[in-house]
Length: 464
Image (cartoon, rainbow, N blue to C red):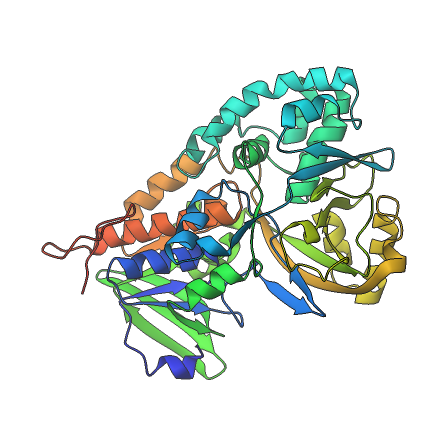
């Protein structure tokens, strides 16, 4: 809905700044609790990196590409709003490159398949036993326990791996996991991010929305009052609510409401929350916004020997190609019969250096990168779609300081609350969880006696 169209709607009790997964989750939960909620989204649509494009019979996920079954917060809302039947099981064979070849790992029989994996030596496989304690610690890298993981946030993943793991495990497995899933090198992130990956994918299955990633936010946004093209520039907590200034093409306005959720990237949130204390402003501003380029490559013929739904590429195999997704394995209808669809993951350093390159130049570089692993890609390509976006990355020390952040937030924030994936290891599920938590905190602050309870696992709030 545009700003002009929203003027015909009811006046909101609560404004939500940002229409990504965190903001949509917060708005949905607050609306469930009986509040009149309006979402202000600066872009042309809600959903942020949950985006889709259709072209020539292909269905392209142009931003986020993973939907593991452990996304319990996001999938919980999806099922509540009637999307259970829109979820399909994706392919569960993974790939790991070694000496220019893709070696396959059957995710349904991980232990047996790993012992036969040709991408690593027998000695390296035995060395993976040193990862067992990390698998246990990974229980702390969940949205509800992330502050406990702060004790491990004292060094980069690369520094920890250097002390703990064999060179082959570091250079093959750890590098591949970080590049393939996070699009970064192990020396750029905290050890906690690896715990987050283990927590996310341990025991998970790969799912997909039949109509692509955007189906979830689009469906959820239709249930909400969402204003697109609305950029929030300032949010101030007041004694009886919040004062929110936002602008559209038609100009700038300031609105006074009972409360506000700021569900924006951390650096933008620090700027918008002009009344936040300096310590929290520095903590928020420390989160890096990495450049991401997502290429979708439509193939006139599916690669004959490639069975992996997703292949991870360590640095020793390629300087900037981190992963190769075969989206035609995600579910029916992703590509026309007999055709293939690749989605590549590229490291953020390379993306930053080439973010403004011409699409044709990027395409040639991508063909050169993927050709050794998927021969014939260039010969069978029907088209390439290039999407540019940004992803947040938490610096080392971010999680160690999280208890202090939460303590300050608890003391200061009453009618304005923050939400975003930077409040845990960043992904769509933690973003959703943070939105639900922010909504719960705001509803507690606004709740008055005598109102009807809302029956869900979220909060008892007022219902008008």
